[in-house]
Amino acid sequence: MLTLLRDIRRLRREIALPRPDRIGSLAIRHVDAGSCNGCEHELTLTSGPHVDLARFGLGIVASPRHADVLLVTGAVTTRMREALLAAYNAMPEPRRVAALGDCALGCGVLGSREELAGAVEEILPVDLRIPGCPPTPAAIAEALLMLIDSRPA
Image (cartoon, rainbow, N blue to C red):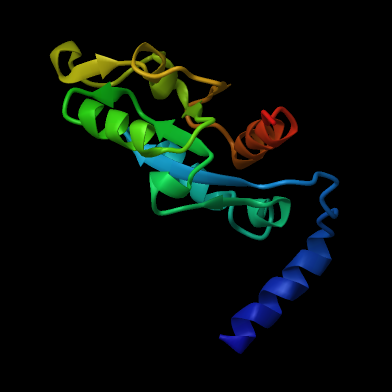
């Protein structure tokens, strides 16, 4: 464990990540509503040392009750529609929703029409759209950081 921490510190020095110039934080609850997992892989990379969203105060939380943002990946399937609505309704106000990836935005969706409830925007009010199949970790980070800058008071 100590070796891993030492290696992470060394890597951060080598790639010279700039210090964050933003103040604030966001707690993000991720819901996979029916994706191919491509967006999840890219989202995981945002927590690595090259992007490191935690240094900007962005973190993934386990409960929607602690979340500022509901981050949804994939086209919403009929079986995930109610779970997605339950997660949204459990969030405190003000609720923010981000649709991550082309499937969540309703573009080029995989699957049969009878199994899909539709794009996230057809079910929940979407505040942030992050296009791409899948979007890069840098694009995800940039978009989520814009949410901090435009956060309601």
